[in-house]
Image (tube, rainbow, N blue to C red):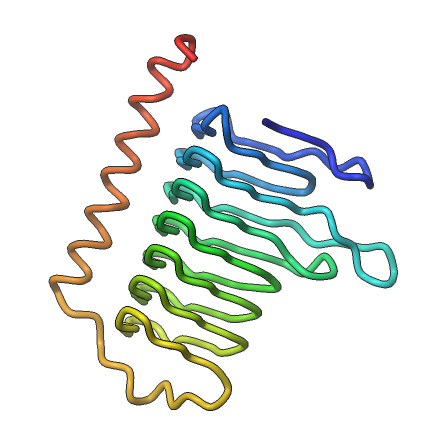
Length: 186
């Protein structure tokens, strides 16, 4: 479902993207080419700052926003999801937030007011709170990274984790094409 926000902004979705009919996109959302947005995802750009301004939520090309993901931003802050990035089932991305390209955010993870640099892998059930994750690092499942965390102790992404992340991105890109082909059946 594509809806206007109270300010009147309406999402802009590239014609090659696939948005599941149960997903909800509200307001100043920009979805680039070949993006997959899965069932029951909610991407909501509707809050404004004290001046009445808001920045968009941008989903980069060839990325996937999986089932039940919530993306929102406090006070109209910018949220950017880079290209070829996977946001896995039931994750919450709450801006302002910047997530780079070729990133994997695992199931049930929460990323708030943070930056996750390119090629990072954040596994399942993690919390990234008000912190920058360096490029190419691996955050193991169930880790909390905040202002008290020493990110220099994070290990580089292994080949296995990188291959897994890239395979998830490829599968979801295939789903874009498959679901677009049967779109009229919904």
